[in-house]
Image 1 (cartoon, rainbow over the protein chains, first blue to last red):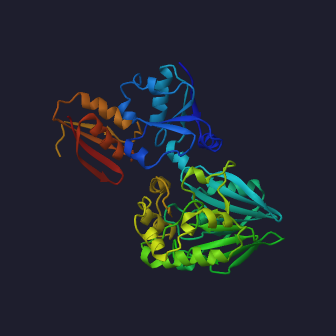
Image 2: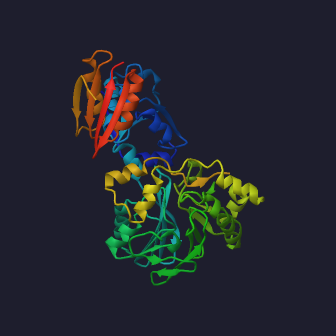
Image 3: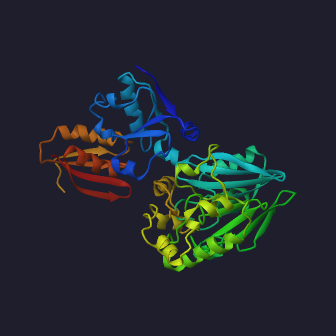
Length: 376
Length: 75
């Protein structure tokens, strides 16, 4: 019998970023595979539901490559392990993904974006779901922006760096994933900031994040300056950190722009979105580095695993910033929108503190790709 | 709904609910109904997809406090 290897999500992330040739045998049912898979430009895929393989894998073996690593993937782990063992019995070397798509969805890869006075700025890349979170560190203090619910990753990282988390921000009330912001703030005693316009229905106390809000971390006071930038939600707020980095939340992405309909108000907010992207952002320095809260396609991920681009480059290349005609812009962001994220209403309610699902339910609510963008 | 056979797959994790369902189905005649009780939430989509791919008919699904019940008619 040949060897079966267990890969964890970090092993897979490494191969995605290094653009390795991996053959993914996804044994979930066809609908699940069509909805969402491990995205990579260098991976190839085959979907055969595990229940079609219960009588044996002999017919499948000739369809598998001899010259690539083979990874068997399922929703949690059981089926992929079973199929991997069946393939090993047929003489193949294969791996399975520990924790399945569930673990893949929860994996965060920290990537250093740049130095700050007295510290550094990190991006946490959630490859499985396209979410991006940030931690700015300076002289023993830290601020976190748009944390995902895997709070342990952030608190451990802060411990490792020997810094105290002072401020936790959400750029807006998220509809596609459950925020970890409030939990981190509760655990660490940090302040939790939310834009009040998004927080009318929340059931907990928070600091009001408004245009011009400014906090400093570390003795040398790196500035974290809030810029009101509505359009994805009515409260959406961006940050300029150290006059060099623009954290654009779900307003501006690398290859697309925010969609205005996830709280049900596309028609009302399209004007705000246009004003933010075509007037407010236009007045900012073009050499700011844009750091969004999401990416949608692997093309947006750089070779070092980060997601970033200069604002000036986006003004030239992002089609969503180059629609002269207001009517054309209006129809782009209100018509033919992609489907709304799974469970987005329940996720918003959870982020308001009005629903308190257990961990298993939270995972289930977040299953699937994020769909916060509209691509021109 | 009346079933000809009942399979208790509560507490079992994927892939076992489907493995057991498939096995239980071999004991039935075409047209007979198997009732499957499971707690693995993944079974919802998988039982439906498996029934379809195996030529069986998923007659009904019920959910009560995390317990899923399926009635599958053998094809």
